[in-house]
Image (cartoon, rainbow, N blue to C red; front, side):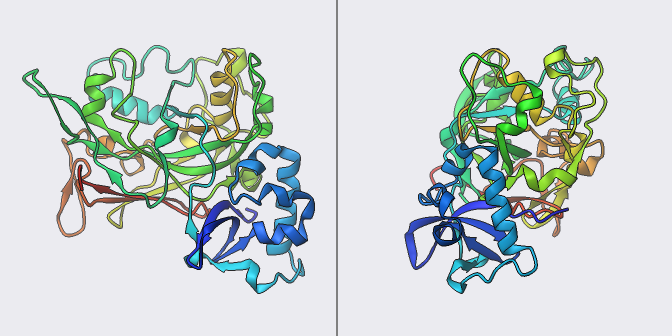
Length: 387
């Protein structure tokens, strides 16, 4: 697999008010804002503001030229002697939200996750809803509460319904994580014009790690009939590094078989390159690995999600974030959320030292990484309400 070379936005302790675009390579970050001024002057304006927004909007031709230049500088033998001041130790980079999130959509694309929740919440019935295999189900989230890795996550409050039917307001007691990938939109689309599967690559710039935190008890009481609201909108954490799709070409694999065959606008049979990705996530709770979800098992792909999102004429904006939904596989140690891992609290996890977790407690820290790929990490620590 070719080098990942992810993009991010950072500052340093000596210049905290000067954000810069960086490209990570091992333990080093290339200051692309500074380097482009002399080494890539025709694209220097894309990095001057220190955020990825202008690069995302520039489109696939610019993405390819910039990546080729960066690869030449950082990877290819004799690619050029970079001035020392252009290279920042990765540990010294203070990472920021890499792009301005325009809209946020969270999907429900894992058959294993959806089936597990169906068995937990609707035992004795078909675990999948009748529409699930016909379209990528999703909901529109709250872009303003997407935060960069390392941001503390305050335990949310909301309405809670007790077993006796009484309703009260208070902090969630069933706080959960959801391990996901996020797909970042670069080039916008025109209003009223759906984006076909074949054009997804012209709009999707890259991929980041996502933890879409979930308050299961708040969500359970509020979601009928309109779906998630306060149980999901309080925080969504993303990694500070965005991996360009061009770095993942060798990770592309066919998605699982679909039955029934999707409608024509979603039918990707024989698509080249395929939109499945052979990426293995790793979830750690308080430093202990509890799950390794396989993204290759996801039923619906990012291209299908993009096609369905725009099928009604809705248009894309630069900085739109499409989250995959919880990534889960068939094995118990491949489940991407605590509600699955603990089977809704009936089978709590035992951590080193003997502590048990059915759901997250204050002080718990969740870290999600991707094995073998430099996505960095998405990390968040739970703090109590009012802390």
